[in-house]
Image (cartoon, rainbow, N blue to C red):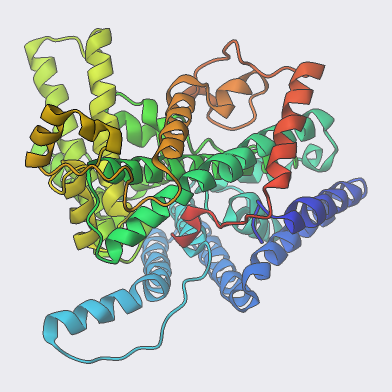
Length: 518
């Protein structure tokens, strides 16, 4: 079951809300149990075989956390040993399902062996519920966990708004909210605000992300099949995918926050206009924010962070980003993508150090900020080429096209300008009137890219629009309300209804969220 489906919107969600608040009138415990059971049903709708795996993971980690927490006082060494063993078991489980086939394929390629292994299917959301529970174990060892209610813990892990594609949650953020009796009491303001955010997120997915996917997918598929993208289509493909991923993940993050708010629970912000960033450092503070927080708190800092000098700091950054890339998928293109961002971060930190020593302003003037923003965006787009490509050859071919090594194509009428035609033909230009890898028309993609880029760079994000109502945790990371701030008015209600109408008439074109595969 996915958020952008009729069965979820018109059957599952209303039924769960009615049951939650109906039971909440009589019993907070039963309401929590209902929501946990509904979340398990939501997960099982995709593949019931893996519900047992999820429940087993929950039981194991709850037990491990309970033992760690009750061993801290007088058996600290035992608590540490339990923590290490529990984390190792979680990583082994994640590694088997996510990387077993990848490991065997690369072992065969390196050694020339012919080891065979049955295809291991990746359970939906395993990376997210595994990381969430590892964070719980570490927080327990650090003495930050105070509650061990098993129903609330099950809900903490399985909570359907976040289960499939994040955010990665902290126990201390969610348990106090699940524990409040007010959580299972109807709050019409939260329902209205949550529904509004959900509709805006759904519109990003259905109307924008999927539209960009209609262009990005054919281009990357054509290159995978042996095509050679020319200048414009290579850039169209790279930009279309960059915007597809942006609106897809941004839309999911908004929908998760909106859905959760309907149950009076605030999730942490996970997406905060990252393409507006003026540096790669800032980008990673705004893109998949809870994963960045997890990698920082549970990998980068334990590795030593910046405590042991600049060289060790840069090594730790590279290790963290390489593993972050591998977390996204079992493929060398993900590792390259992570390593590329690691190099970006090293260069960014080094440049900041140079500016500090020279006494230059860190933020710079308007022109400097524009240049920094453009450079950051282009660096991110180049990274996305590796992220999307099936293999290194496809990524290399796309990048070759983006720098013009495969030539470029112009409309036929430009061939009438003989001098221009001759010069451009000498450097590989073609005057075919079409872009050979695009079947839906170059004019349409250009208009769509302009609209998408305008929304990304000029329109406030959903959390800014709704900032007056603090719909999520960590709202201090969001710039305060703008002139587009949402108000409970007839005009705004009509606007949301119009958006909902266009979303619903296009909802039959279902597609899964890109982050489901991670």
